[in-house]
Amino acid sequence: MSTSDNQTRENQTQENQAWLDAVKWNVDGLVPVIAQDFETGKVLTQAWMNREALLLTQKEVRAVYWSRSRQKLWRKGEESGHRQVIKEILLDCDNDALLIRVEQVGGIACHTGRVRCFYQRLENNKWVIIDPVIKDPEEIYKK
Amino acid sequence: MSTSDNQTRENQTQENQAWLDAVKWNVDGLVPVIAQDFETGKVLTQAWMNREALLLTQKEVRAVYWSRSRQKLWRKGEESGHRQVIKEILLDCDNDALLIRVEQVGGIACHTGRVRCFYQRLENNKWVIIDPVIKDPEEIYKK
Image (cartoon, rainbow over all chains, first blue to last red; front, side, top):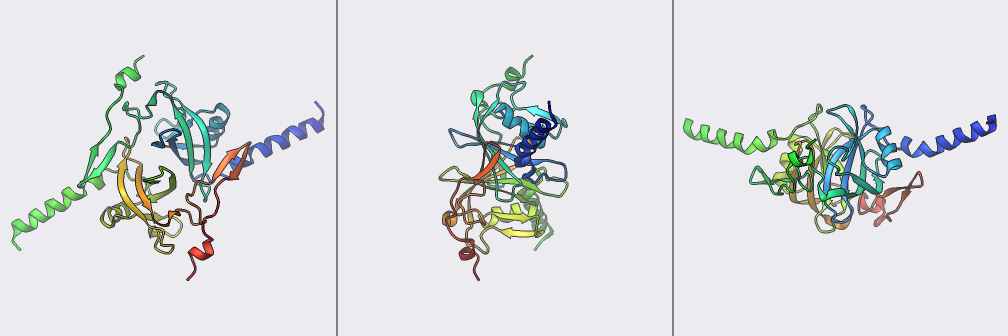
């Protein structure tokens, strides 16, 4: 491959990743991500991505997050099968938050076996569980 | 007021704030908040609250955020008039993210004069503006 070819490839890579540079990553190199069900409009979960996770999310057309507790990439659904297929990736006005609109495979986003993670509602100064468990987590995560 | 009255009041205050203790505030004392339009289901904005902001949000039935850039409480709409009236406050499974479902006064959540802050969509490795400006920000923020 000629020097010119190398140069072309390098320019292409730089151009392709400019959209990643546009994101304002926080001091930990992360950005908050909101996942919303493309069909129902339900807000499913809030998670985090680093640069690599966002790039993989785009390439693999599925949500890939950065797990802060496990400090590693987390392909949503890798154990449960409950993948989130990407329909749309949106960035906010300050470039520091992402909204992904997804098809939620299996209709369950939460590790508790519920449709969404936001199942506790504030009622009279108490958090009340308002959503049912669709599938027992032991069933979901069994080996 | 008797000692017994004082004790009762103290117990009530403690009980009333137990829901605030349940929230896992980050090292900066903040929690990410997603604001969603109650009627359209559109995700409007992502912001932050500290303990005081969440308490005020509940008490005043309008979104009160913590502005990280200005380091002070920010009653959404205090300048623009575009308040967010609270319909529902939800907490996620890890207790570290909030979803507020709101009535967006004026139909504009973004300081750019758009319906929502998430108006940039990833298309062919570029962020493309997909939402129109509903009202000129100079008009919104004029003295």
